[in-house]
Image (cartoon, rainbow, N blue to C red; front, side, top):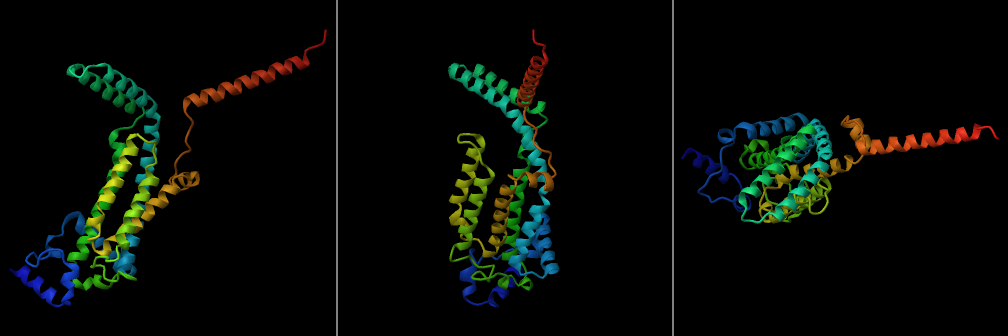
Length: 309
């Protein structure tokens, strides 16, 4: 009852159109108390955002944007680890591709009613993949670490920002923390510019970050996430405008990072990554070519100095 009374007083102090524009829940379901129910990681994120706002004196939209960029820069060591892991995984791919070829061929040869034999082939295939990964000192967990952690942080921040906007105390003045047409961060963007921009930028970031050949696992994974983005547009249009002050800078950073990853200077000077060494087969071919060239030069020299009969 006390929570309902506090909610009623808070709502009565605002304009009558406020509830119609902001509240998506029925009037009988009061919003959660910021100080009582927000705990754990979400609470830590929200207090960090408040600290950044107080220290920098930036408007709230700028606070969300700066916090986004600062967080992504802080993840650069994890990005470096992911690149090293990807190089090891790339070294294991030829063996895995060969195993997959023989696996598909053998599965086509076995009738569907030979369940035990088919299960043995599947088990052998996965054992081979595991052995190939172990030889190259890489694991599935290492491969998935960066995208999983990045996705978890993104979802956590989206929820934390949304919760802060919807349930934060009025003293934060989030109602006037926006800019341009989205001055009130609590309100939905009725022009749909912010949610559509967020989806478009995220779609482009996935396209740039997961460039893979058609039909491969990563190509299908990219298509899956892009489809989820497009299907979620109706739901995203109902989010407060302030959420996109985090989302849009995050997507812009992802796009910029994807382009920088193509620069050897960025990889060597910023991420401190060693240059990619060519495969052993290329080294052997190069050494063989140089040896043949040197032998040819030596033979020519010998012919040149040979006395005439």
